[in-house]
Image (cartoon, rainbow, N blue to C red):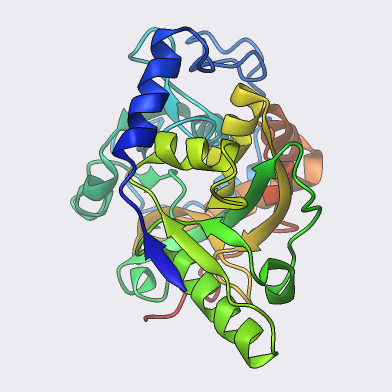
Amino acid sequence: MTIRINFKTMLAAAVALALTGLAPAMATEDFDLSPEQPGRVHASKNEAAIAAIPNDFKFVTPGTFTVAVAPGGPPLATYATDAKTVVGADPDYAYAVADTLGLKLELVPVAWIDWPLGLTSGKYDAVISNVGVTEQRKEKFDFSTYRQGLHGFFVKNDSKITGIKEPKDAAGLRIIVGAGTNQERILLKWSDEDVKAGLKPIELQYYDDEAASLLALRSNRADVIVQPHAQLVYIAARDKNIKRVGTLSAGWPDRSDVAITTRKGSGLAPALTLATNGLIKDGTYAKILDHWHLAEEALPKSETNPPGLPKF
């Protein structure tokens, strides 16, 4: 069963909490969002990756790896405390790739909706901004994978739910999910499987925004919240009152990966795949993910243009 609720009352309560100083702070000591980034991990040159760059490939700026990133929120990419420097896991990964290629890095903040046109028109060399591989996108772009695309199952710290790995684990639960999202599509399939197995359906709940969703979870109006994993990792560290009980691949039942995105046929993707595999092999990759508390999203190896999410 799916339900939609208007939570004006809950939003008002959230505002009241903020005004009384009881709401959690918007930053957390577990994540350094300073513009200086003293803990940033650096990488060594990868001669094999450099040699794989096509001789006729022309960078937007010679000697510089120009990368677009959408500052959607921590820990993946956000504006630092100076409100102008972009920091996070994706910027750090871009710096590491640039290091391996012997290039300087220029980050170009963009709105998410604008990256496809900017990339095809040659405004930047690549996009490193949590772009998932899909069969439709592969028609226009090349991909070098660098993280798993995961959603997270999170519950209150005192919840009796200890793990969600498969449909039966979610049977009968009240789960907060975004309308029209990939995770909603998957959970509807899970619910159908539960019903066919004689179990209770999943009750999906839809809220107006993140504040209302979290308030619903804290007030026991819902049992679980499902969002992109990285977002919930940051919220859990910030608020200290929710915890992870499972992850869900964006490509369930298959794996779906996030990738460096380049222009179709530019020839740069194989070099970026070699660069990523070098970072995985020498441990730099793991250090970057650990620094941003995203070790669960690690890939065993990078691939060029792997199978992506199908067209729905």
